[in-house]
Amino acid sequence: AQKITQTQPGMFVQEKEAVTLDCTYDTSDQSYGLFWYKQPSSGEMIFLIYQGSYDEQNATEGRYSLNFQKARKSANLVISASQLGDSAMYFCAMREVNTNAGKSTFGDGTTLTVKP
Amino acid sequence: NAGVTQTPKFRVLKTGQSMTLLCAQDMNHEYMYWYRQDPGMGLRLIHYSVGEGTTAKGEVPDGYNVSRLKKQNFLLGLESAAPSQTSVYFCASSFRDSEKLFFGSGTQLSVL
Image (cartoon, rainbow over all chains, first blue to last red; front, top):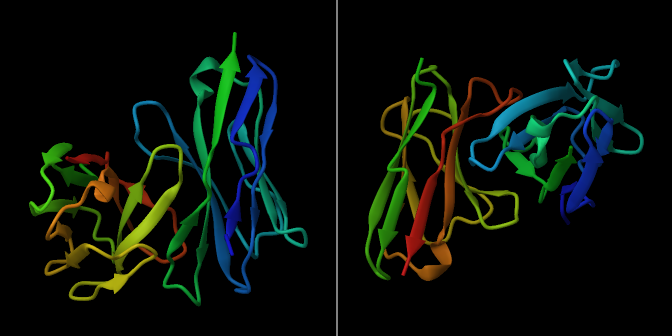
């Protein structure tokens, strides 16, 4: 069974608007971390934001926030005030600490296009 | 501050040839990983290492071998390249198993 599911292959958003990228995950581990990475067309992988499974508050990093709903096993990325430079592929990933030696599992990604 | 360095950045092989990809990190990280990314897809784990001298198989290990003789280096080998191994390869590292990954810039490999 796929452990990370990103159901939106592609998304469009108008510049300056907010956008939510969906991510659901599956794990039986109690201790895990959820990550979002950005991959622009140049190909590098850029870390955006992290949420630990025991964190009670939703993580925020500048214009990025992670909407963490543990019971629903979802970890959606919210980008506020979209910019043209946000156009990229976005990957949700999970690291299971106790059972999998910290191996990261990635979703298939969502391609975000910001329209001017 | 170099971070994670992968060499080479591009490589073209003929079917049956062998090659080694080198990953070097200067952050004293314990954990190192090799991923492959096929077009339009996420990253899939090939092999990983949780410390010097240790390696383990990931999700798609067939056709690859790895070695971690030194803590800072993690080598990925293809003994007999196949067209199905055409992909972008990423090396990544982290200090602890709960922390974010630091990625290299990737290696574009084409097998003809």
